[in-house]
Length: 209
Image 1: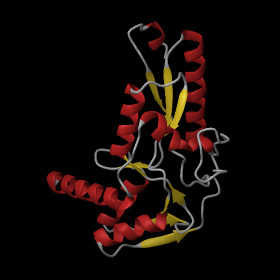
Image 2: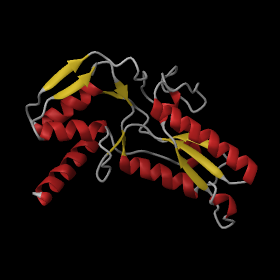
Image 3: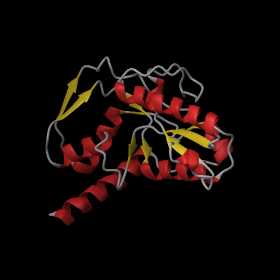
């Protein structure tokens, strides 16, 4: 942002925040104007970054847009997020520790849909500091993720743990604004996305092997 304020050629800055800024969801689906009360450090840092973007944008006239992804997964996303972690452990025969999987819901979003949302937020005309949820728009439980992985991998070893009280209660995010203003339309449901990710990880494993 210090650099951007002196770059007159930059037409728009797209800031990647996170749905973790909301903390516990109070609405289902959760809209962009829902309360922001993060429960852990990552969400707190992401919310802080949004405030910094807003300050710079107003003070230095930087045209900005903020997007909030959720539970991203898929080919080339190698940050060891939850689905990659579960797939990798299942494929190597390691025990999976799942926290309250029947009641732990996330709006899992394929990386290609996330990339689509980022692209649209970049090229479409938006108001300054407009904020969008860029997710699939429908939550799924961890137990459903595990069921899909089991169908792909075969037998898996799962240990069920009690839910972590520090982890926020989450679910579906409201993506109607992104659909209306950006023309955003995610296309990867969980079954399709995990199958593609599984095939990708198998390819990488065979290539490296």
